[in-house]
Length: 476
Image (cartoon, rainbow, N blue to C red; front, side):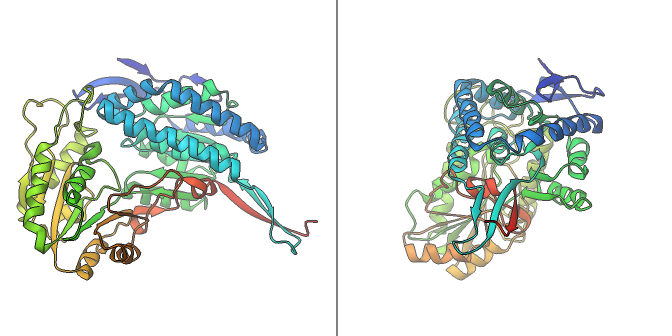
């Protein structure tokens, strides 16, 4: 078992002011994998003090120096690729191959892309050729960064790298149930040679360190990825100090499949939902199928779900692992049972554990058909390997059903009619739209409408989240 009780503050690993142990559980076997400490306001104050001192110099560092440090960080990241992959597999249950090809690779992609954005970003510019007004982009200040457990390194790099590039200093609070990848990332920062106090890490839970960061008068910005419930609390906590709040929250994506869609559209839709054991906020968890192909689609979806293997994370190969925790497992099983009680038809999976996997938080890929959009399984974010299939008559009805949600993160459409696809994409009320299975390129903005959050991560949009804009009049 790993002893990871220390915090990274002002360039060193130090003991917490008040010790409060917390066990990190390996979701594949329900055994304690590591012990961390949950921080207190005294630890937060220490980290903020270090970040304040470091800010005066880091905020003035030349772009070239920041680029050199970030390029060094990227090389160190690549050198320790397997270690990062193994850490995430252990702490959040990602199978090794998936952990490498999807989880670890996403972090490298973000670091590389932000380096490119930084190289091309103009922090100072004249308003126009005839104006004596000058526009200056300046770092917003000290940032509190709160990251989730489902895509640990992905979200850490989406927040830490643009904050560093902008000239901010920061305190990172990774999820307390998957904190080890964040602590490893702190080691990479240290090895790269970033000045003490620029990056700090404190472990803690939402009600403790999360609240301390979001209410603290010396924190200028909070960037949070997690549940909509927690996002609302953070917004309320931050209101008294009028700090900037960037939120990337939940989702309940719709995937409209028309009769002229690609032959593999249904099967690919199922795979999309089940990857990462269903623990992705932009997963298309509501599949809307045109009635003329509904029966075939149901058969294909059930068949594909039954083909997906479930196994422990330490095994290589094409399979899904456990969900993150007992709490999450119980929530998902409760929602599966609610789908059965409300009259949806269960055609694959269900509440029973997969055969041979009695220990660990494993859930079968589950498919419900004949779902009505007012059912809990169609309304609530399940965050597990569960798909609801809903029939529709025409385009107007399908779009109406997809938009009938409080969320608005990612929606999907499958059709060979390009004009119809574009028309529907414009009608979706979501921050992202995926046509015929196409994915987003590195550097495109990621974020949601309504209760899926505000602000954008990635690319120049993600960099600008960490910048203030100053207008100087009379500049010659």
